[in-house]
Each structure stands twice: as C-alpha cells, then as structure tokens.
Amino acid sequence: MKYFISLLVVLMSLVSCEKRNTNNSENGFISIKSPTSIGSMQPFLFSKDKNLFMSWTQKMNDSIYTLNYSELKKGKWTETIEITRGDNWFVNWADFPAISENNGNILTYILQKSEASTYAYDIHMYLAGTNENSVNKNFILHSDSTKTEHGFVSMLPYKDDSFFVTWLDGRNTGGGSHDVGHSSNGAMSVRAASVLQTGEVVDDTLVDYKTCDCCQTSAAITPKGPIIVYRDRTDDEVRDIYISRLLDGSWTIPKPIHNDNWIINGCPVNGPKAATYNNSLVVAWFTAAKNTPKVNIIFSDDSGKSFDTPIQIDNGNPIGRVDVALLDENNALVSWMESSENGAEIKVVKVNSNGAKQKPLIAASLSAARSSGFPQMEVFNDTVYFAWNDISENQPVIKMTRIDINSFN
Image (cartoon, rainbow, N blue to C red; front, top):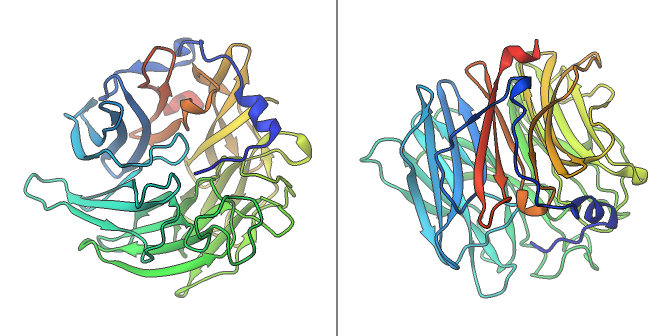
C-alpha cells in the first residue's frame, strides 16, 4: 500500500541500519536457531495449546517468493513446509502473511496482484490439514472483484473447526490514492468473516466504513465473542484506536479505546495488538498525539465493554511496532521497538493492570529501518519467543531469541 508517513515517524525511522543484532544474554535471553535461511523475512508467530508455529516469506530471486511454515516440536523446529510460491505477490514490510491453526487445519494467506497496477491485490487464503494427505484449498477471502487493495489480515481459531478473520478492504476506494480527497464512501474499511474448514467464507460483514489505510488490524476471542481493534480515521483526520465487538450476532458501533486525539494527515503504519485471558482484554498501541510518541497499554475486565486508564510503558523514544500477551487476568507482557544510539532495540516489559511496571528488558538490537518489519512475540510453554527481520548483512534473515517466563516474576 502507499504510505504517507508523518515527518515525525520518518525521522524516527531514519536511523543507521549498520547495527548488528545482539541478544542480551545476561538478562536471560538465549539466541536460538530459526528454521529459516538467508533471504527470509516477515516472520509471524502463533501458538495454540501444544503447538507453536512460525510462518515467513522467502525471497528466491528477484521475482519469486515462497510462503513457508515450521512447527516447534520438542524444542526443535520441524523441516520447512512450503505452502505456495509465486511471482505476482505484493510483498510489503508492514502487511505480511500470518498463520493460524485449529484442530489440525492450517490457515495462511498471501497478497496476490489482481492487475498490473501496483496497488491492486487480493487476499488469497490457503487452508490445509497438517497431515500429508490433506488437500490444499486456495480461495480469495473477500467477495468483491474490484482492482483495489485488500490486506492487513488478522485471523484466529474460532468455533469448532472454523477461523475468525478480519481485514482492511479497499473496495470503495476505486483504486485512488490514500489520504487525499477520500469522501466517506471512498475510504478503506474494515470487514470481518468466518472461514469454515471447507474453505467457505461466511458472515462477511462491514464493521467500519472508514479506517486508517495501512495500519495492522488485531483481534481476540473473548468469552462474549470476537473483538476487533484497529486504527480508525475520522473526517477530521483523528486516527485513534477503535474497538468493535460481536454481540448476539451483530457488531457494536465502533468506539475509541482511549481518546488520544492523534490528528495526522497520513497513515502512521503502526497498528495495535490485542490479547485476552478469560474476561480480561488488553490492547497495546503506538500514538504520537501532540507530537509526543508513546506506547500505551490498556486493560479491560469485561471483554472490551469498558477500559481502564492507559499505562505508558516506553522509555521516551518509541518507534512502536508493538506486540502483547496476557499471562493471567492482571499481568501482560508488552514488546515494542525503541530508538537507541546505534539503531533500535526490541524491548519487553511486564505490566500489571494496577499500573505497576517492571524494568524493561532488551530482547535484541536491530535496525530502526522499515525493512526490519514488525518483531513478533509469543508465549509458549512458559517461554517467551521473539522473531524479527535482521538486515545487518547484505541479505535479510530471520533471527530469534527466547527467555524463560520466570524472568518476569
């Protein structure tokens, strides 16, 4: 997608990318070998029950990419499985493939060009079982045939063997440029649907008709039902984080989780992340309202109906690119990128809903450039895993580290 980034965000990103990744082993972090090779990028971590998966893209040459995944079993990554490959993908630093699993079914996707225009592409989903005899199902998520942008997908295991999916949909933009002269019926929108184990897409619903154009969506499944959080866009160019909840078969009117009142005439390319534990819901996000960059976290004890006061967790120079996990109903881990003297650092901190914060730990050092992507954090079997794009050499490669969950006690 086209990105119109504010001067503030640009300045934060223009930092030297020569800094090599280092892990802070004295803080309990241990470097681990990833299942990827040179040319890999865009990692995505997903865990469910006894399974931890990582998907990523692999650049084969100047035009061909592959989408791959591996599963962590007994502390080791399984042999790489290639899901698909192509030479007509839209490969982007901020809008990257994800993976989800439900009862032996794997759901992934890629963005495939729908015509020669740079910003016309569809969400092609791939559904397959984890056994070798399963049949790969390839289908387009959205029902429209417009030559516009579709992406920023979030997906989670849902009822029975299905998946809940939400995405940004450009069918009303008519292929026009972002952020310039959009009327209310010509903006990016957010939609939601369910994907059945047969590959059928059901309950496709418009949730918000006007949203920010290129910030990631996020979702969670609460005891009350699914919720979506995303960066909204008002007619006055306020781009705060909003939530909508699926209650009794209908989506609630979207509302802000907090009124940052960040007015920005372009997409900051910095979406929120949500996590749930029983009735507790937590959302982490980046804002630069009043030209003051912050990473905040906010708790809800009623599945997103209401929220407490935001808690700022950064150290004063955040880039954003957040991730979050709930350890229990009152304690969360938040990761984000923070500018450093020689580039940037992935930081992580434990936060209590009462506002208490531990001292942040440095998981890794990396470049602050956009090509570093969005670092991933996932809690699995009492271990916290991190994955990110390393661009310190001539070609990108995914690097990983882990830390025992007891390090945050």
